[in-house]
Image (cartoon, rainbow, N blue to C red; front, side, top):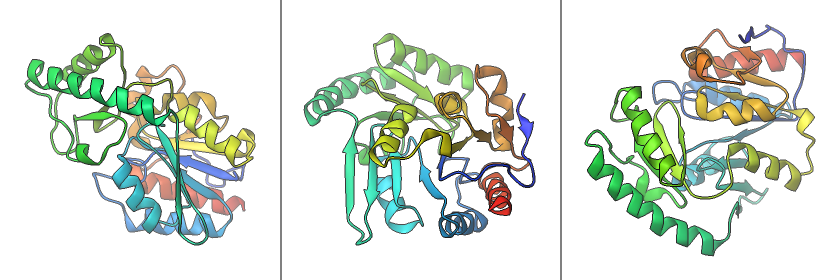
Length: 255
């Protein structure tokens, strides 16, 4: 089981990787405290890099409007950096040719899933995705987790990668993940993994918990702990963005 998050965290990371949905947000909204925490961490010299399943369109909006300079999107399909002049530079995990081929296969799979599973609905942001398809299981439409698992298993059996978060099932083709792209981002920015940490909230964050030495879960991860082979090392007392703010305070106390 994860340990309780200490009031003063005994480690100051250079980079804080974080999930977005229900880790920075709570019940679909970004608490004001969370935005203030992002700004305070940046001012303290801790770079916050969201690592999310969110669509490319949303990632573009976040990096333009939040106090962050990098973001990893669509479950590791790409990262985007912003320079001091505000120019955005995307880096993809696979080539444009591979992305185009995969996209056609994914559209066929999406049609199959929507026909076979009446409870399946594509996400509202599907039109803004570049590399994956996503099914809504808890954002605008809520379905039983057992039904979501049936959809996930169908996509896996079709030869795709399918990861379930607290709100979506994301499906893609390609040998990449949140973790592999986070490592690629570290290499590109010459940052030692030992100087980083990660905070998340759901089973699709497990690869990050497993591959980063210091990890934290916001409290709403607790129902999923039995599903995780590698749970986070620490857990906050508060959920979502309020838990992130709790972590921020603990890190700033240590700086």
